Length: 355
Ligand SMILES: O=P(O)(O)OC[C@H]1O[C@](O)(COP(=O)(O)O)[C@@H](O)[C@@H]1O
Ligand SMILES: [Mg+2]
Ligand SMILES: [Mg+2]
Image (cartoon, rainbow, N blue to C red; front, side):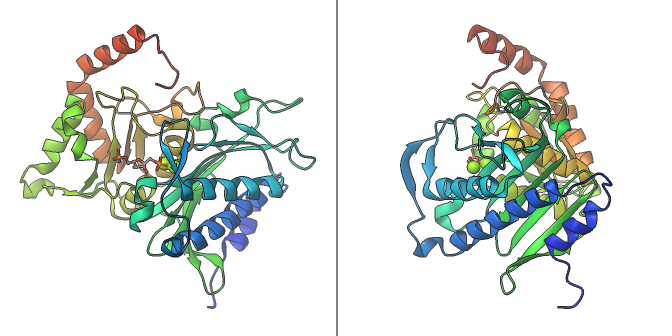
């Protein structure tokens, strides 16, 4: 096992890159890793535990909460509360933000936004699921941290990461200086550096989208899918379609192999399905740090104004050249869609908020 570098060792080592660091972010990342190990333990034996299936509760997204959604949410929130480095938690599973009003936390510097269990529809069928997290520094300097502190643009993130609970469990994160991946070694209970300086290939031949929604996709997306399916050796087509249905797992594959993941707007969801604050922004930060691209089909995800905790966004993310081409199709074919979407939102009196 010589030469193994654990996540803890790596974080401390990298802390030296930030001369003014006092270790708060390092400890916060440690707390997230601890919760990930606890969730991993339950995911691994889910079939044997009363952790499969639905609860009776519906979350703010209108989705039935899975037992593992709730369990993972509790584990991450309690690890953040006891760690003391975070004053606000925004979670997919909680309607409102959680202000941690404890002695050790109320003056903490950081805000954490989290999707505690990503890929919920795959929990009961033993397919890879994940966790996504995003970390911001609070902006307000006096009194209690506020909603404003939680509604920062993706460009303000100081760190972001995901955990994929798959054949092996990996934690992948960035603090804005590249992306590194760690594999959990259950025999020592440590995340160990296995994928240093991850880089997504500029090009790939995997496209990842739920084609079951084809009829409801914007014209630009339909055209791009057709482009991917054309027989043409010179351009390495047809591409391969891969869709796990857990965003984290689909993205992890694409970071390693190259590819594009698209969850666009659809006729029924004019703002898309995935959530900006704890899904799209952290993933966009990681992908950009790995040399890829992340947009909503028109503009950079990280520049998107954030005006509500559970705001949704379309996402086109992955290998730079593939996303650029998809955007080209979107701009060529989507003027009418955009005009239609915006006028329908105006009619519904919904500009900016969640739909
Ligand atoms: O079933 P669909 O509509 O293709 O949606 C799948 C997408 O929804 C998600 O499951 C949404 O995330 P949650 O499971 O965290 O709600 C993504 O992981 C996945 O990419
Ligand atoms: Mg999710
Ligand atoms: Mg989730």
